[in-house]
Image (cartoon, rainbow, N blue to C red; front, side, top):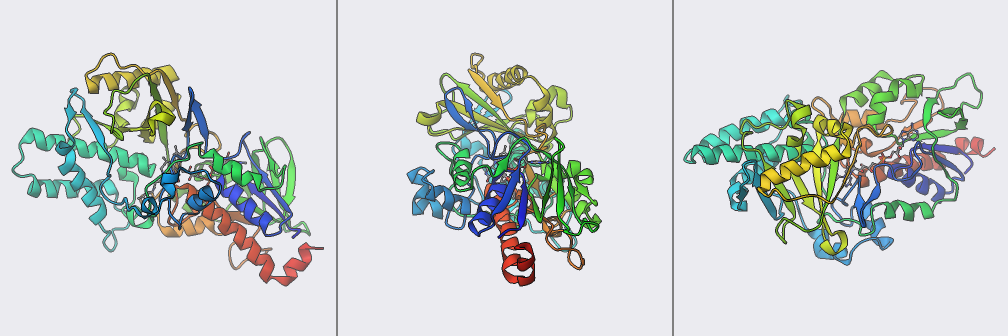
Length: 494
Ligand code: 6YU
């Protein structure tokens, strides 16, 4: 197949599209990547001797329906435990089944049973709420606040005031945790429909023992050499070039290089598109498409990885939670970000197994507080986190040995972490975003510009498997175009 296909971005969506196309016989495929590396938001790094993930962490739902799991298994990249049928069959919706160490801002360590009523109420609400007719754009925060107050009045009416207040503070921590998971600044920005639109796959989430980038490396080995041009940011995609007889799409790169292609697959993150779509396309995107890009959500979730000489948490602990005892007003945002950004960090995950990682914790922080954290020197972040850990544990000697934090908001080619279902957005916005250009009904040459990337998957947005499937989807669109349009096939082969 001689049609020229240019893919913008060498994350998993771009790599997946290139692999599918080359395997189907497309000989002229090229990837232009802005940075010096492949993988995009799949980024494995080092903290001392440990392999750690700066971007994507887990295969969410590692089971047969998950193509990332199937590929990783076929390349031999997973631990035997992740491959067992039991692991693949586990259902993890609802109440998190992790062993927690829970600390409060007055230095108390709580027994897990203390927070159980709050956990049950919060995750019960998330599971049970269903949007009513016309309630499409209600924010999840409004719904949660009203539900918690109603249920607490009934279910906790005999509970003493301090216990009740503590449970509400626990719910504030859980909301901050949900902000991290959903990649949203606040539950107030999340659409109620989010819970039903995102589809979780079965299986207990697993990691890549040698790092997530192993998946990218394995896929890249199957691509022809020199298919990727690094350090080549695309500045402008000139499509619908009606004055040019061959009606090619022209790509202009930052360094001044110009390339022409029959088809371009754009896989740049939604964060980048939001910021640059007015200049990235000439002619500009149709209004319905650019409006959808602006309506959809793209937020920041960062990691603060800390290495310790020895653990200060229990041997069976999976996660450490911090409860601020003055947050019973059900808050998930900080008012004075510069002084109190650290309050937004709800929990640390313990990296396991210890034999592999040593004593490393991964703190999670979302939202504008996280974006502010990125602007601080690393030592300042370390000082703040250490202070909070010492305060909550009541142990003034705890001192991390090393720190590594991600800075996804200030990564110029990503501008955040991943997409979320913003209040007022709908599945139609995702449909609009993935719609190829020119849009249906146009007389111009079809499929000039196609769109892939995690934010364009209607159900698996924000995940690696979602991104991979969108790369395959757009590659398949071109493959079927050339296999069902003989005249087009003929022309391009001339
Ligand atoms: C997952 C996980 N995970 C943590 C953190 C982050 C993400 N995700 P890419 O950005 O990879 O590639 C685009 C390329 O384009 C890139 O290389 C750019 O440099 C390049 N580019 C941009 N502009 C360009 C230009 N002009 N010219 C040329 N090149 C250009 N996913 O499955 N498991 O544990 C996590 C996590 C900190 C930041 C994650 C996780 C998200 C994935 O990383 C992400 O979706 C894919 O890697 C994106 O691939 P891509 O190819 O599309 O873009 C209810 C409900 C809930 C809904 N949410 C559920 C939450 C699930 C999210 N998971 C949790 C998050 C974690 C921990």
